[in-house]
Length: 215
Image 1 (cartoon, rainbow, N blue to C red):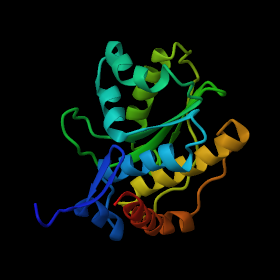
Image 2 (tube, rainbow, N blue to C red):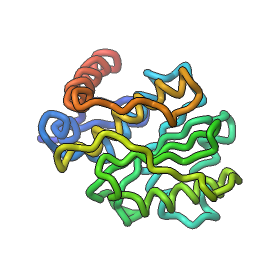
Image 3 (cartoon, rainbow, N blue to C red):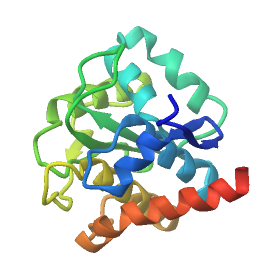
Image 4 (cartoon, rainbow, N blue to C red):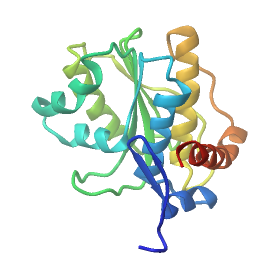
């Protein structure tokens, strides 16, 4: 469509004008924007830290909805050739496997050094069921004990109904930096409201820089 032109083709991500528009206003972020930023974290910002893995929302949704026996289809290509000590999942409350949707994002993180799944939800309790189910599925895939291996950690709470995706991106980046320095994430300081408020503009600036690089 002429009114939804491609803005940026970046590795596996394709951003259209409608996606970028979500960053310009007080709007809920879709799968495409979160996938793009997770890919930026993986291939640019933390390219020197292969022990970090940022799993796209689309793949996370497939893992969440598939039978346990099929988890390896999605996870083997991501973890079999490189040791991943910290794995970040952008979790959505969507219950459909064949369509995007949902109304809330949260962040689920696997920490191999701590043998834990940590959940960061900017609207406490909204994604608990999805987070617990996915956590146990990941732990079973990794052949790790499930008992006591899931924890909701305190995190900054959103002040509106649309910034959950921004919180996920801010939390993921801060936790990744902390993990690179301390090889754990449990004691990572909370993000701030100022960081959340600035993130949309920051991502827009990153998109502009990448447009010049990949034009």
